Length: 506
Image 1 (cartoon, rainbow, N blue to C red):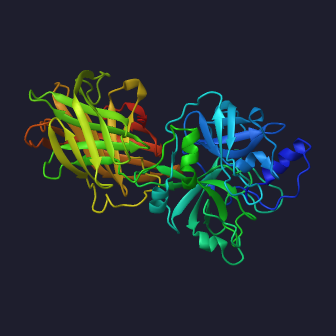
Image 2 (image 1 turned 135 degrees about the horizontal axis):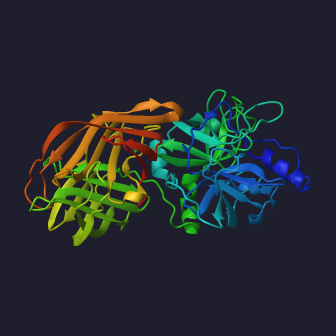
Image 3 (image 1 turned 180 degrees about the horizontal axis):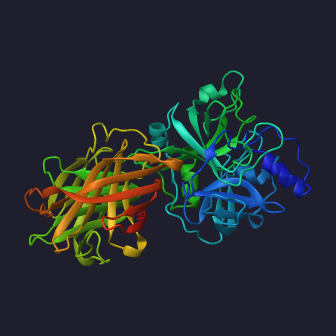
């Protein structure tokens, strides 16, 4: 299915005598990926003339995760850093688009076995950073077990061969295919791989669908419960393409967390702790957004001071441990109306320490301003907090236009239900909290549209005083979001102005 065909072409170009291949790699019976759907996907190119050979994913803006077999043949390394070009930020591998980078370093797993394909994983350091929305988050043992059980739908992506017989056909446009997770026992059983699938590998298959030659090194994704995706596998090998007896085999990313982190400490690893809206159940109107990406946390609380002025409290930084955060709480005031000219808020200093201790994935205690509060996840729709992965939905978190720092919008998705909040000011300067709850509508290319009338609230809770409920009511103003992928959107404001948004990378 995947691994050898691209290397055969290279071996011939380099006059290296290679044995006949027995395994290959490609997307079979997939569909074209929408432009920008997979911003973390890259093309790894080499050979003479240079052409696409393997895929890979950006785990930071300087590092690519890919397969070791792309650079080895029969135990010998035949492709080196100086031979490789990485193309990022494109759906098309022949039109010259995208960001082209060379390599500063290539790190293949020291225990990679070219015969068994065990430990088929490698890291490529780019010679210059690329511009991306957000790097991919990698699965851990806990998140893989939760989000990718046997039978779970997963997605493979690549520019590999699209036919199962005859001369190979390599597409210019990136393709994706949905597969189902196959247990290791089933993958090893019967006429399949006969015990050669190790604990360092994952298997995935679907009738008539598969990866194939040219897809090597590319990702196997699963949707996380926050609307985004997590990478669980690296396309490795198989026998044939879309053969019913032989599922595709992928390097199991969760087995290499320590190895990856040792080389790329800034890598983001997924957590089961839930990002989204948290609140004090006994105090309506006292709520906070908490996001966790890897070992980073971003906290925001939108309230009022004792004089009635809108106040924005934030804290961001590295987690003290997997279950706790310690940081300073910064206070901001002033800022943006919903449709007016951009006005940045003003930082008015720290108001003291913030401590958050998670007691489960959906409960926590928070200590700030001399008081301790019990927090729990806010349920948008019945069963939403316990919901499983939501494919193709917007990723939960803050969205912004980088040219308008301080104009931000919070979106959380549970199932296909959305909670939107924007904390701003009315035209009269009074603090206003806009929000809505709505469903999502699928659009072409796995995109999503959200459209709803706004509601607004004024008045409400200060940081430390007794509970005060806000005054809320429906508005005739409408906003629309068009998401081509889970990480970017075009927002159309009530005055008709369109604003490009991206996920806020903290």
